[in-house]
Length: 342
Ligand SMILES: *[C@@H]1O[C@H](CO)[C@@H](O)[C@H](O)[C@H]1NC(C)=O
Ligand SMILES: *[C@@H]1O[C@H](CO)[C@@H](O)[C@H](O)[C@H]1NC(C)=O
Ligand SMILES: *[C@@H]1O[C@H](CO)[C@@H](O)[C@H](O)[C@H]1NC(C)=O
Image (cartoon, rainbow, N blue to C red):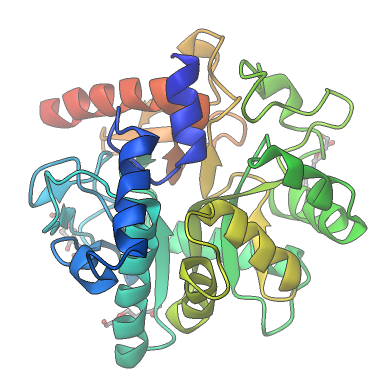
C-alpha cells in the first residue's frame, strides 16, 4: 500500500473512508470552530451501530457501507445478531470526533439502562470479527484483568500493538517498569508467551510513520484506540476525556486515550497477548499472507472463522490498522465468499 494511505490511516485512525483527505476533515473542523455548524448538528445523521455477542454489545460507527450493514466476519452463534443500523451510511467521515462523540452518546444512554452492561467499542471499517462466542471473550477479558493485578477498579481492556503512534509517546510505555511488568505478567499468565513473542511475527515494513522498535526491545506493548472493552459506566469517563475534556480541537483520539491510560493505570490495561484483538500494523505487510499471524480456518460446524496462529485459538477481532489494511481487506473478501458458500 502507498505511504500516503499508511499516513492517512495512522494520522486519522477513525477516518475510515479511503481517500478522504486530511484537508477536508480540517475544513469541517474549521467550520465547527467558527460556529457555522454546531456540534449537535454535526452528530445528526450519524449513528452508532450495535451488534451483540451474547450479552456483550459491540459498538461501532461506520459510514462506508449500506444500511443496515453487516460487519465483516460472521455471526458468533445464534445468540448473536449481525445487523447494524447505521443512519449515516453513505455520508463521508467528517472528523474523528464524530466516532467518539457518537460512542459517548451511546454510552450515556447505556449507563441509564444498565451501568454494569459490558460493551466493546471498536473501529468500524477496518475490523474483522473472527467468530468468538461470549464465553470465550468473557474468559479472556477476566484473565487479562487478573494477570494485570488490578483491584476492583480495573475493568477496562484496550487493544495493544507493536509500534507506537504517535511515535514520540512510545518511551512512556517502553521505559516504564509498571507497564512492562504488567505486560510480562499478562504474556505469561494469560497465554504462556515470552515477552518478545511478537518478534518472529513482525516483518516491520513501515519504517516511517509508526516504526518498530529494534528486535532487542520490540514488544506488543503500545495502546491502540481501535478496541476497548468494559462496563459502560467505566467506559464513559474514558470517552468523555477522549472526546472533549481539556483537549485541543484536532488532537488525535488515540493520543488522548494514551494520556488517559497513563494517568489511570489502576483502571485500564491492554490485551498484550492479542487474545481478544490483534492489531495487524507491522505484522503482515512485506510478507506473503500465508505467513501472517492470522488465517481463515473452519470451526467444528464447518463455518469460516479467523484463527490466531500465534496462539492456536480463535481470533475474536483482527484490526487492519496501519499497514495491516491490505491483509484485512483480503480476508474480508475471502470470508464473504466462504460465508456465502456455507
Ligand atoms: C445476559 O442477559 C440475560 C437476559 O438478557 C440475563 O438473564 C443473563 O444473566 C445475562 N448474562 C450475563 C452473563 O450477564
Ligand atoms: C442455536 O441454534 C440451534 C440450531 O439452529 C438450536 O438447536 C439451538 O437451540 C440454538 N441455541 C440457542 C441458545 O438459541
Ligand atoms: C509454557 O511454555 C514453556 C516454554 O514454551 C513450556 O515449556 C511450558 O510447558 C508451557 N507451560 C504451560 C503450562 O503450557
